[in-house]
Structure formats: C-alpha cells, structure tokens
Length: 337
Image (cartoon, rainbow, N blue to C red; front, side, top):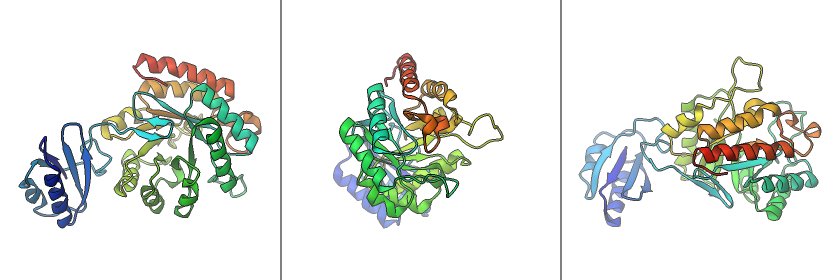
C-alpha cells in the first residue's frame, strides 16, 4: 500500500509513519514529490495495517497498490524516472543513445568505434567484455581486459560505459570500470544477480527475456528496486515467436504500454530485436516515434569481421544516417537526440 502524506507534512510526521510501517513488519520506501511525500509500505499483507496507518498524524490517505510490481508501478510514483550515468541521460526530454560493438575485440576496434558513435551523437558506449554465448565454443569476450579497454575509451571520449554483468561475483570488478550494469536477456530471471545489482550504486539496464511476459519483466525490475536501487532502465530487445524472417520479433507496443504502467524509462534495442542490419535503422526510427526514451544499437567498424553478431551491426555511415533520421522524428514529437 502507499501512504500519501498531506501537503506540508513535517519530517517528524514522515519519520513517524516510516517507523510505524516497519513496526508492522513492512518495508518503507519514501518518494518525495514536488507537492507531497508518498511512502510505500511493501511486504506481505498485514491485517489492520491500513487502519493503523490511516490514523497517523499528517496522513492524507492510504491506498492499496493493485499491481503485483509495487515499486515499479505508476500507482506508487507518477512522475517519470530519469536515469543519469555521467553523460548518459535516459527518461527525460532527450533520447539517450547507447551504441558500440557487440563485443570488445581489441583496443583499436573499441577506441575507433567510440569516437565514431560519439561524433554521431551517442552518449553511451556499449560493448561486451563478458559474453554469454549459446555455444561454449564461441568467443566469450576479453573479460577484465575488455573492461579496461572500455574505461580507456570512456576517458578518451567522455561516453558512459554500458556493459553486461553475468554473475554476482563479477559486480565489484565490472562496477570498477562501468557506468551502467547491464543484465542481459538470458539473466532477466537470475534473481540472485538481480538482487546483487540492486545493492550496487550503479544504474541498471535490464533486458527483457525472449519469452518473458510484461508482468515477469516488471517483477524482475522489482527485485532490483526492492534492494534500494531506483536507477533502472527497461530494455525491449525482442521476443521469440513463430516468425523466422527476423532473429526475434520486436514488439514496439511495449513502449507505450510500459509508459502507462511504470515510471521507469524504456530503451529499445533494434539490433537484437531484428537481427538484421538492414532493418535496424527502420525499427530505430519506429521506436523513437513510439516514444522510446533510449536506443541501444550495435555498430562495428567492419561487421563482416566481427567476432560476434556482425550480421546485425550497423556500419559507421549507416549509424550516422540512422541518427540523422531519428533526430528528425524526435523533433516532430517534441524530443531531442
């Protein structure tokens, strides 16, 4: 449930309600708005809790949260969350673009592509140092060496580093180099990992699993939020269907649905969502038109020689053209890239 405080409620009254919530065996989460403060009371239902909180000094009303995902719901917070990580901002008027190769392959490759995507207007640099691959014989990433190269690219370009973390024991290492921790689609329901990134102080990019429903996706985000990390971005990267003309099916209705359901910003990945480079720019434009708060796009200096997913990576000229087209669409709907 949420406890809505009266306008002008004092800090003493707010602290008292927090104390009462915890005495009832619930967990409190304070959301300070422009006009009033709201306190979420989270946990298993307690008989009499609503009545006990309603009588508190400074309380305007107590409202049950109907959605199964409590902290992600617009019932708890109507003002949209804006996630910031150094130069990258996702969720405001400006659409954040995260671009780069699927994998960090070499120093020359990542430094070259970082300069290219920065000049084109991206503010985030993607690149996998640890690569979860379907086959154990495929390229698995450069691991910590890859992280070091990403950090070097950040130092040279100012881009925010977004990279995947695959296990709780890797978080400390990855956090030493990255600005955003990415939880990949295969790990969307890896609950120990979700809780661990929730305990970190870094923003998190959570990718939807290829077979996950919207409720499962938002409940995965809830694991992160419940640990106190409110800087969560939701990434639609396509789902598995019976279609075979694309690698996955990219359902862009996800964007407006999530905007109606949650306050968290929504990023779209048209590279994984289509799996075909010749479809990426079109779907990126469509994602911007649908209201996406961010784009995540694979770009490689020479896709034919990429060690992973070269078939869905844009060349630098194609990425520049995509950015120019997306800017026009963003301007038409009152946003910027």
